[in-house]
Length: 145
Image (cartoon, rainbow, N blue to C red; front, side):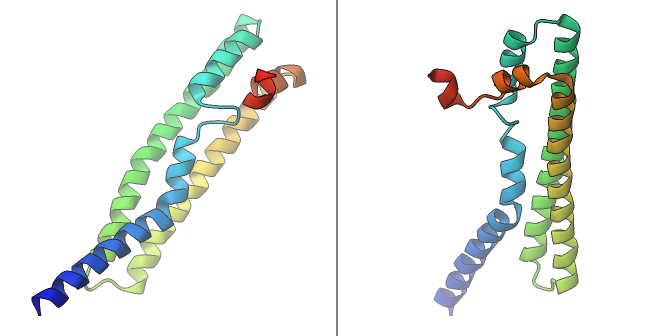
């Protein structure tokens, strides 16, 4: 009997880990991936090198500051949603409605993260000309040639 209980516990733990990765893996990836062309730190450096006008450079840096604030907020919400999903899964009396509610929160957070990413893209795109955009967001392989 004891052996069966341990086996069930291990199985439940694996399922919880699997669900956490499956359901919230996309959100964590989006939080950590930065912007196209590299990390935010790399983008700041590239913007400093490429954009010569100090006013435009300051405006671009402000856009990155705003995006980082949103990203930090998303990280906090992500931690809460992840905890919620795992707690719901761990309940012995959890109902499908409980799961629907937890998954809806995860879906809403993913949508918010994607919208924030698109907003950052649009804000930067509107402040750069085509040549600056290509220089800042050039692929690393192309830059090393």
